[in-house]
Length: 286
Image (tube, rainbow, N blue to C red; front, side, top):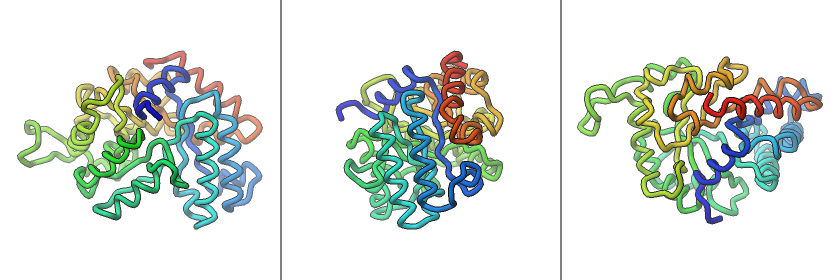
């Protein structure tokens, strides 16, 4: 694996467009698909989504919690789904939202990013709220392994706004108006310095339903980083909104949709992915 994650992601976005299909086998969806709310049901749904997504999009994002709830059998199911996705040529973002310090964080990093790990993904989501510095070893491991990471910056849940839009008051802040989200983005973007290609391997999560200006996430702050953007589809944002929402950095956005795709059921999911992916390709910059 000689290319960086950022290079592989850039190729996937250029080929297939911005759509990322979320794999979220929650109980209600499993029932709607005629599957049991078990690890086996979650495995079956995930594998069907992978089959439908392969060749139609470049990226899938399994939500780890919906597998973890079933314990060891759930993790085994997730291993099968992620392995099948990677074998099908899809980039896999494990939506695990891990964040800790020291050797504990090293363990999480090895689990999700170490080549050959049973849970090996192409990238993982991380939370920085034990301090962005706590992620440095994980980001370094990701880069050594030619993997990626997406660090939570401005998420779409309203409960997070007060924290993520708060202003940083310390000697490292840039000016008087640096927000927590902007500080996170600036800190983790340092890991991309010197990487080949136009797109870095370390990115941030920025919800499509938030006003990124309120979090200090202007174009210059986000330039060169991949951006994982939940909030498209059922949460309200649409492919035609991409440019309005992300402007200069729209070409680096991985636009996640889950409910808007999976809700149509197993018999129509492939056609739904085809249709939604085409909308993003028709609007490559929104």
